[in-house]
Length: 432
Image (tube, rainbow, N blue to C red):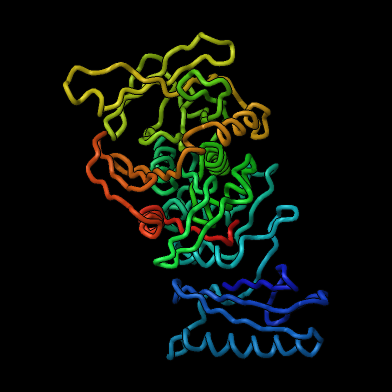
């Protein structure tokens, strides 16, 4: 597989590239960069750069000749000496435009990163970013990338795509997502430099999180990032819908007393006689890792030892259902149990569009008033028995409600190393 990008006097353009022929009408082409990744060496990217000054017909012909020679020479090293075949993903070299208006595919750096971390044989440069209005039907290649992003093998991806929706597969998808895609607010904060180790300043992003699910999908799948509730649940809902699940979005009011509700949950219909609640975007450490059928006064435990229960909520006309939790950390200390804590309330028959006005109002409040986002940097990732949290100047691990390990991070270099090593996130000013 190969990807092609160009630089034209300060801005980038993408071109269709097939065989060894480059076609363009751009008068200001300065540079062509070609990245090649093969199935034989999935962790390596061969980069070929052609400076073009000035652009002439002869220079284009030279590109074609030199590229053909380079590709032939590079490929020869990968083909077995005894007449072996060329890797299948080098038979055709193409780079296609995405379907999003005025938005091209993620740059080669993102694709290279994805190839190095996840299976490159399936998640190649042909993945497309879909339009918001057709998001319910994710492009096949992009859906494959998403499933690989959350840890599924090629065989597992094929099985999930080809089989009918059921509770067992939905649980697998939920479990995989919450242990690979963190809840994080890196875009809301400036990341200071650390001169001793030449750690650069990363300014606050120019673009804050939004309700644009295509941006959220690109961020999660290609930038190996996480996000907050709207980003995570919008994206996961789109994945579920593309796999055949019947899904709805519901506005949720965290702690059941917020002046402006600022959370969203997913309701899945058709698998039971009641809707099933799925939430991969709850920012409080220890997100529920089991499916929650909405049955009132029927507690359900998760693998962390916490217990969840739905109750009727008739305090307002806007909501009718309340989800409560009893934490194992609160009840295990003296064996006497504890009072339930209110997680959030929602309306059971909500079926909201991603562009609903209430979502925009909730988003504005979360990004301007919520201490979770405005107070400090935070990154939380679930584990089989608890979660790991990266706080202001520490990282800690919690199992069964109890802190089992904590490491202080006294400088920015150590903090970013923890972010990369334990959450797979590398901050890069180029993404701003």
